[in-house]
Length: 306
Image (cartoon, rainbow, N blue to C red; front, side, top):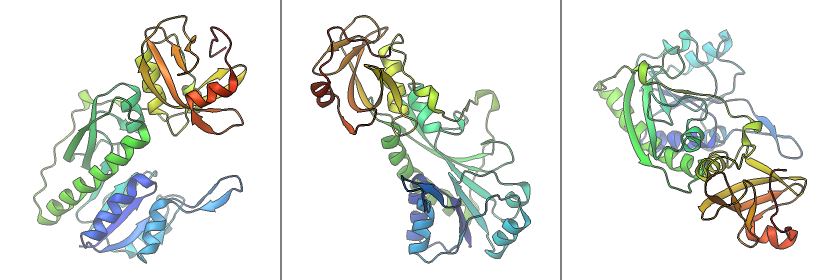
């Protein structure tokens, strides 16, 4: 059974590695083009490409899968099954219908909830206590295909999106192997999604990271956790931008945005308080919240966000 793998970021790497470890023949890997990164804007290959090259797998990086060239490249791999994990590009009908065993996607949510982009981040932002991964047959709609298998896990109270993503990637790899084995044996039992229970999430943007301390502490904490890597939650402190990477709920009350503890960096919210555990001041480096305060000497009843 020939398998073509389509994926791009770190989240997809465990799935490709699991296929290789299980001995499945991966005849081609499709991933997004190299992109400039860092201060020098050097072209950097996606993590999936790096893994594929270490195993001497054929790598294809079309700008779009909607071209005849891309379709011919896929045909040259003679796929019986296509696996898609966070590829980042839409697949046209011609691609979806090409492999005899179909196209299977690993999606980082318990479908039909959280269809679309950023399901891991949104599950945290919305205060979910549980999430998971779902394998599904791909259809032309956005994450609308029939579900195959799912697995769930609990979300930690202080767990960030990066940490949850890493756990889900491992869970997704395990689930994928189970699904592929059943596809090979012809024992999969597809279940249509209940569209009435579906939810869609939007793409993350930088402005949504601006903190509003008039909201309850739990909402502020969830936003910080959900946006921990990008675009990162932020506020202003003494006239400059302050990014917040980690937080936890704390006790205390006061005017929203008021600094309640000048040593532990506890800030009052509309309801409750939040401790800012890891921050980065404009032009500075990431550091623990208490270390930041020691160097900035906050004024009495300092208000953040002004």
